[in-house]
Picture 1 (cartoon, rainbow, N blue to C red):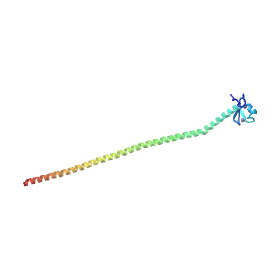
Picture 2 (spheres, protein in one colour):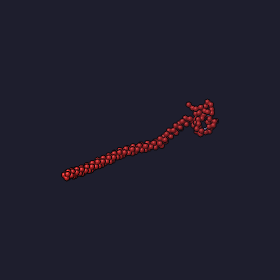
Picture 3 (cartoon, rainbow, N blue to C red):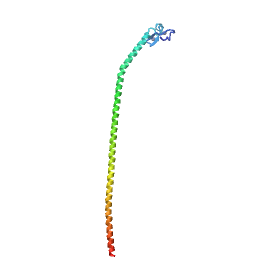
Picture 4 (tube, rainbow, N blue to C red):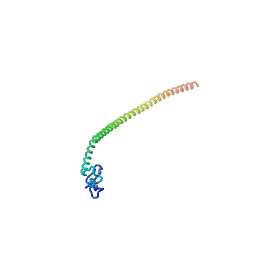
Length: 155
Ligand SMILES: [Zn+2]
Ligand SMILES: [Zn+2]
């Protein structure tokens, strides 16, 4: 249960030198290097260390627990903010997409309408021109016919 002494063969270290922070045997305390130094029973050392560990743990819990909790809350807040932000972005993207589609549809509708209008206008103009030419042609024919008749009658 107790460790053997490095300096005194066959002796068990039942105590602990506080000055040197090392296990010591009875001979070490009575006449060895740890004579007149502050010693305590090894069991007391264990108990002291246990208590120290307990109080350190409690201290850490007290110190870091609120910090960790706050950190956790902050992270959750940041996450929910990010979610909201990107959700908004998604919505904005969707509505932009819709409005741009609408814009493009309108533009192509206009182009379509204009091209049909121009086509109709051009065809109408050409039709009118064709009619005029036909009138001219029939006038010319009439004149030719009249001239022919006149020429024939003079013979
Ligand atoms: Zn010893
Ligand atoms: Zn010592």
